Image 1: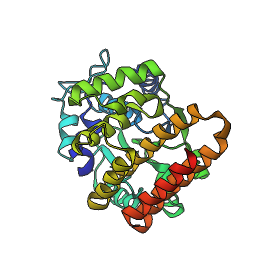
Image 2: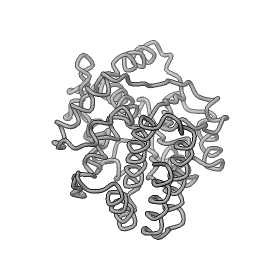
Image 3: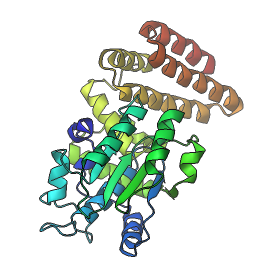
Length: 318
């Protein structure tokens, strides 16, 4: 929870909700009609605003009786409402969060901790919301522990699951949920990214031209990491890769590897446009390099060795 609060890009710090008004209004309508499902699964790419959406919805509910309620007309959290201030202080008993703490997904210990918290905290006749992020990464034991927890929820409990990948999650978990699919069009992506870029004062760099290959939330983090690393845009692709391999080795910030995969998307997107004859071969090469990035994280491989493998594959693909 502390990681969520302290992250400058955290959805908790997004007081304004953009473009997802239809989803927000639907959730509010379900709640007002007493038809809100006990278990909701939000699916879609990471960085499109799923967490922001449900956090705003939760704040709307928990601040209904506040002197500073949620502004549902402008989709705006009033930072002076009691629930929001309690969440920032990590003392809001009606809000629980199990994050992925990437690269490690939610564990069985996380689920047990939430269960203990349920027993210790007294219900105050208000809904209690539990958000679980990156549920597709949970292993079977953690998923089973979660299934037991949500098997017979109290009248006040709601579970909001976030699936950030296209890959399949554990089917028993999916089958117990009502799924909401979230998608952004190109115009919506641009609107959100421009707002984030202005809010966080992130300077333009060549990455910003490739928003179609990622999402606004991820691109703003990539751009910030790019600026922090003081990358010269004239640097070779190899140098960029090596810098972020070394930075991951030093910081264990999984975002460094996400950025490498994004750089691969950019490079192979260009190769695909330039070489229509070898589409399958180019795709296979890209997949091999993506696997290599995963192996680098899992097995602590040597950075220069990995970079040499990159060069070999680049030469072969090019």
